[in-house]
Length: 340
Image 1: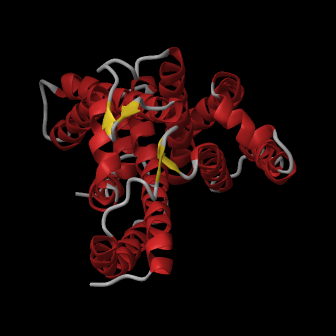
Image 2: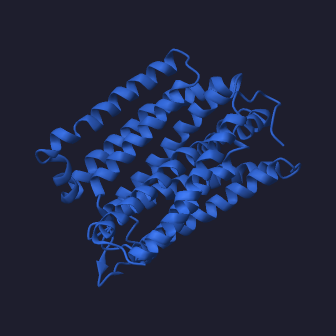
Image 3: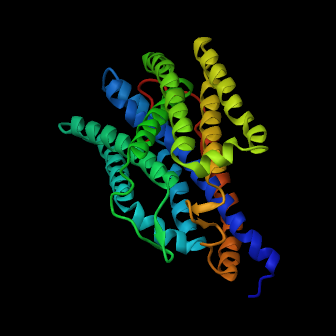
């Protein structure tokens, strides 16, 4: 298959956007059910825990489809980036996947366990919290940069373990707990929803502090990011991102105070997406910061076209299925109710 120069140029951009969408969908959708696990230890009793888990029971495994799409898309469309990023971040990646396994097994076994239910509660909460933490560590390790020589990873196995990456890990835990709490406000009632609103009011300022700390740390520690944000005319073009973030955070706080059921959830999704856009602005077009771009790491154009054809057909199916499931199981899950 012959591909023209024009298509050769924009194919990696298309695939980069597809991967960005997949990761954003995963962070938002799997974020709230990981957040449920993070909040699990704060439930008063098993009935509240049951209500929390039942609120995400129809969705949680489908949400992880986007993680597979992101990882598979990176391997297919950007094999060089995959071969560098995976060795650089191998340990936190393995820890994250093992945590997701513990979380998934606990989700299935807890409902049928009798004498060992408390152990599955620990596995669910611990797996969710560690998965969120290591996702943040992966993000921090990626943003801070990967040492590359001769198109291969040239660093050590613990290069990712920096204070910045650990800060990002804690920030993601707080962020997932926040989106989990506003999900519970929207999807549950009774004491569970009341407690979730209290948690959301505590977590929103914490998440803003983490976002602010990361936003200040990155330009100070990484000159390439400072140049992107604070040189003219970029400074004027990009200033709306933090301004809109603060306005939306104020709106979310007002909605929480005024007893809104649904708007806090969508507002927090907006905060996540604005933070995601900020990270994208900081690193694009580098897929292996700070040295290799999407064009440097792209697969052969013919390979990208071939896989893109399948993706064009499958992505609407995945989106349609996701939308259908969320519509089918709309409404609140009350105490004692569940999906089996």
